[in-house]
Amino acid sequence: MGTGRRGKEYDTRWGRSLAATALIGIGLMAAVDEIVFHQILAWHHFYDRSTPTVALLSDGLLHAGELIALVAGFFLLADLNRRHALHRRAAWAGLLLGMGGFQLFDGIIDHKVLGLHQIRYGVDLLPYDLAWNGTAVLLLAAGALTAWWARRAPGADRPTAP
Amino acid sequence: MTGPAHPVHEGTGPALCAWGTAPALVLLAIALLAYTAAARRARRTPRGWNGLRTASFTLGVALLAAALLLPSLTHTAHHDPRVHMLQHLFIGMYAPLALVMAAPLTLGLRTLPATRRRPVARVLRSRPVHVLGHPATALLLDTGVLYLVHLTPLHTAMQTHPPVQALVYLHYLAAGYLFAWSLAGPDPAPRRPGTATRLTTLLLAIAAHSFLAKLLYAHPHTWPPGAAHTALAEEAAQLMYYGGDLAELLLAVALFAGWYRRRSRTPRPLAERGAHAYPGAMFQRH
Image (cartoon, rainbow over all chains, first blue to last red; front, side):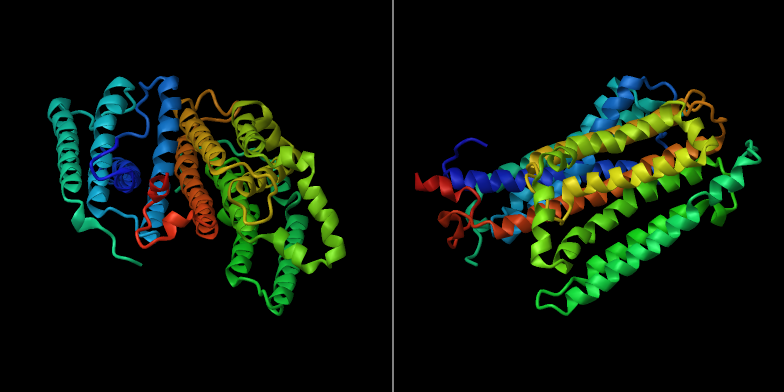
């Protein structure tokens, strides 16, 4: 996060709070993708027969990363909270940035570059892709705005003495 | 539930089911009795014994028994790939995790007199145990055999030779236990590598497991060799993917729970214990 006006200790607190929830955001969005689009709507396919094996391998690694990110994020957050070192606004910013980041990554890399599966089958994909990646950009913008807001007003977030 | 017609290999079926099941169930019952007896003794000591650990051991034994009885309980063909997959998940992933969390070694050491504990500790600290108990070795033994079973003729050998199947199941259990213990076991593990190494190993394990599941789903005509391709094979592959996910999620939680506990025990630098306990406060001193 660099050395801000408020010193390193503040930056670390801010950065760690943001990083912990960014991990949760990534894992959460991956879970939403799996539960809503794969299972409930059944728009996505488990595998659509056009995926090369290499893409399956990288998909496996990404999937593993998402799973661990979700668990790691929650435990890091719990640890920060336990030590009264949680910066709440930075945490919200991290969550939004993580969710938006994953959504954009999924929309561009998974769907388009790796071609693992598409959003929906048998329809014109363009509006779906625009909605998908547009949501991602909105989430990222909201996250960036929250992060900026969190940096601006540090006093309100000072932890109370334990 | 029953899918399209699939070949039922007459003759080997009943033998496959019965072979080794009865003695294995007896062994499981003995293990459970021994554990609960030791736990009852430990509860009477000042340190006590956590009832959740006993519950975890019971769950592990129950999962193993369920896996053994699954083919006869479901009345399905012996080569239903979904039943095999459930057995793999129970024996190789869920039961080992439940047994590891029960800390049977700790309980055993508490039961032993002090003089007998030292040799056990010496074995635990020995080089072979260190090499065998390294997460990388455990990963290789645990996931390696999964690839062998599904991508090589070992699959056919398992289905036609009950002893081979029994050995593979035994390996599933042993390797699954070793893996869960090396990553997150509450039992003593001298020279256990740090959190980063163990997390990397877990990441590779999850990736290898989900990759194999999707590979089996994608190429049902190629793998497992010798198996007739039915829609059931695809269901089995998905079961492997999602079932494995849940087991690995639980393993990750166990790993991080250990990290969380240790973090509260390790004394932090003075600067961090102040009123404003920021994680970076220690940097300000210098």
